[in-house]
Image 1: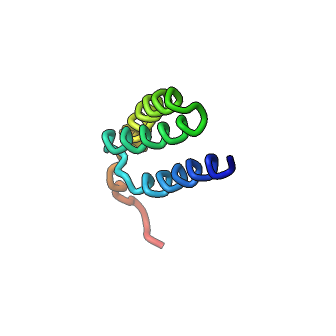
Image 2: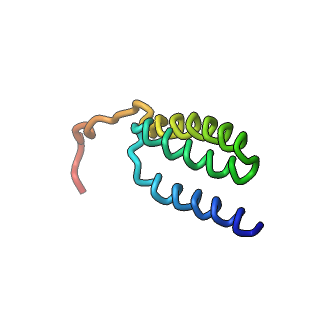
Image 3: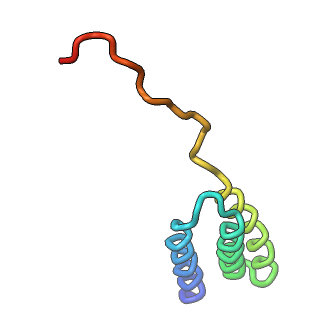
Length: 87
């Protein structure tokens, strides 16, 4: 019983470590990693039906997480001219 819990946990932790190197705009890789992780965890919890549901949910969440961007569209220009004495 303990091995049935530890193997999916170790696999999910491995996916989390390798998924951190993915580009933020790579939705396909996010969907693949999320789907695989969700399927492994879902299978450990609910068998075959859990694997299907977990894989689908994980793929959607992985794609959405990978498509998120930290860029909010705010870009600052170079600083303006300094009018005054330099200290």
